[in-house]
Image 1 (tube, rainbow, N blue to C red):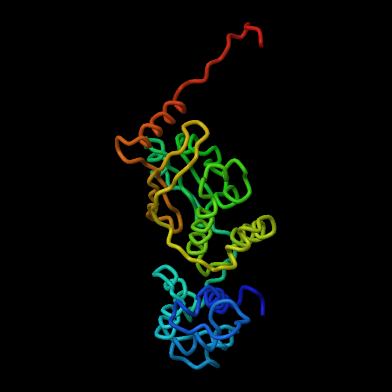
Image 2: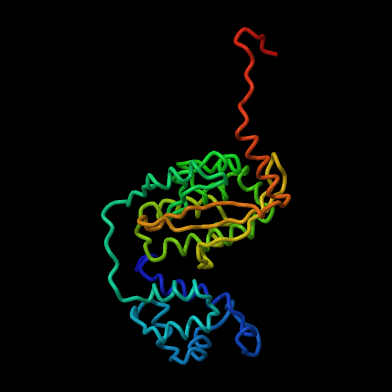
Length: 285
């Protein structure tokens, strides 16, 4: 059995190891040889047999009922996004075989919208590839340009990492959002390439990926330490691009008339100002 044929079992095991006995009302007795809950404890709390739960983790039973999965989600303290992900893993519907990578195309109307926006904005794909960005987004981070990947940059590019004062917290949310975005579609060549590369090159990514955290791709407040305007806190919105599954329009905006609003306007003025050039016959100093 290959690694990717038992995603349900991997997820159950990873989440089980993150739940402490105390958090579910179990007494701490003696020395525990495994982190988190034991299999039999999960089974008992979910109201199923220990043998059945073992079969689920080992991949010998692939079709648990919705009731069983919801009971397991409750025991494993999953939020709505985690529960939805678990239900998706337990679905008995056959997965569509992917014969070729799916090309992600930004609609022409969204490109025009990007050019008209006065806030930093870009479009990201299912694997967090940057597909298009307006100039102010690139002024916010030079890595926000078409062809870059946000996961790779945040984990591997020192300049991008330095933008995030709370880098460790940011990486937790980023990886959890990535897992939710991809879902069960792990035969996508782009996904396989990206996870393989980051698992080999980033210890931090490898540890977070093993946790199986899931988080919805949604808006949040983000604080950046920008080299030109200093620390600024922005509201980040993530909007679905209609007719283009998996694509999101990501937009940053500041609270009106705040210091952050002033800094964003300042950054916009830096971006809009033409670069001064010396006359052709001027000596270079």
